[in-house]
Amino acid sequence: MKFCKKYEEYMQGQKEKKNLPGVGFKKLKKILKRCRRRDHRIASINHQHGNNCPRECTVCDGTFFPELLKEMEDVVGWFNENAKKLLELHLASRFKKCLTWLKGNNRKKSHLGLIQEGKDLVSYALINSVAIRKILKKYDKIHESSQGQAFKTQVQKMHIEILQSPWLCELMAFHINLKETQNDCSGAVLASPPPALFDGCSLVFDDGKPLLSCELSDSVKVDIDLTCSICLDTVFDPISLTCGHIYCYMCACSAASVNVVDGLKTADPSEKCPLCREVCVYKGAVHLDELSILLKRSRREYWEERRKTERAERLKQAKEYWDYQCRSFTGI
Image (cartoon, helix red, strand yellow):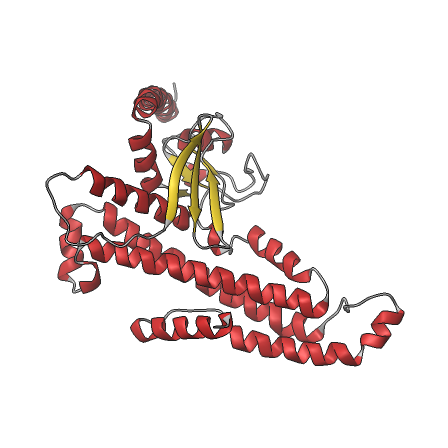
């Protein structure tokens, strides 16, 4: 089965359950067909000038890329919002979970329901990522150019690449946490194994360096380095900046020149990411709670040692902060 048909069938099945955005694969292919006919008419002229693809393509510049960009924004926005809701529910207190269940959300009434919801989100992210990659590859093939790849690089800088989403990282950690919780449970016999979000997802330590690795399919693999580039150690109390780079929370506060009491939301917009040097990356930072739980389970001794060190540093900064506030108030 061709991917286009497979994608259309998947999206049609999902839209019957809930209204969710997707990539207009057929529509974009029709736009490219018009481009192909146009290119055939001017191929001889381009060949004489040594240019196989015109720099200015009115069809693509005016329709293809703007349409694809809007669809990508909708897909990533929907995925982030729903992944956030799922993970918040998983980490919520029992009282909050009961309130959610009483509201009639039947799909999330059980442990298996949470897993299935996560599995659906991962499948959605994967198939849309493949769809975007294929349509851009087709664009480059028709135009004999690399503008499709350049567009992909551009959207990565705009943070609307779904495989760069911090919520995908959280879902990966969520999957491993659930699997380890099930392995730790003793005395309970399951009639059938629960569904897994990923077939090949694991946290590995290569020469002491942590790596969160996941094979989403035969052609898509995600590797996330969990070494903080500031302290050069395993991230503690991890946080993901809007550029996608992951740091320890305290290290991020230090890089943003803010006190832990004020937090990253008070960071100046001109402060840059230590790695990519991008500005305005701190205010929208995401706290990776599932990843924090995973690392705590995997390296208990290291986590306990860092917890003591971080606690002492937080108390020191809090004391300095309130001392300064008292002096400012009293004028001493």
